[in-house]
Length: 138
Image 1 (cartoon, rainbow, N blue to C red):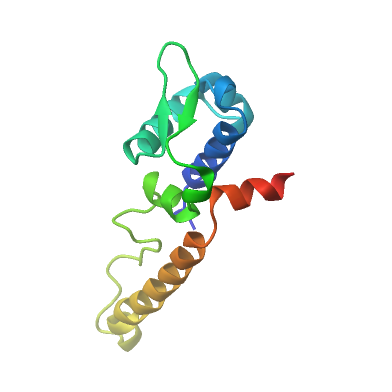
Image 2 (tube, rainbow, N blue to C red):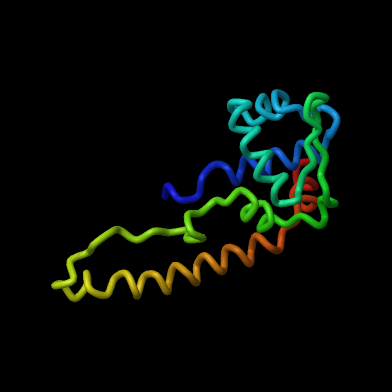
């Protein structure tokens, strides 16, 4: 299941921190809470900024949300950090044997199932806002 990277949970963690205490949110502070390298956080902040979710104050440090937490869904975050390759959550193994009836059909049949599964997951993520998530912490 190497497809969903930890970037998604790190991004949700980061945005939650910023919502909680925007003034303290330097790259180092976030990296300390997420327990990862500040370089990883900077790269991720770049993605969140590009998606219009955060504003970063270089030099001074600190970051702020550009939308209210009630307007940011988990799907927004998921899309912002570009979690999947070519928007495919699941990849199917390469080159099954087409001489075999299973090998010949597995990709097409399984792709349809997986597309539905991904779609269900995305609909579910769209129902939860950052605000709702943060309230569960308290």
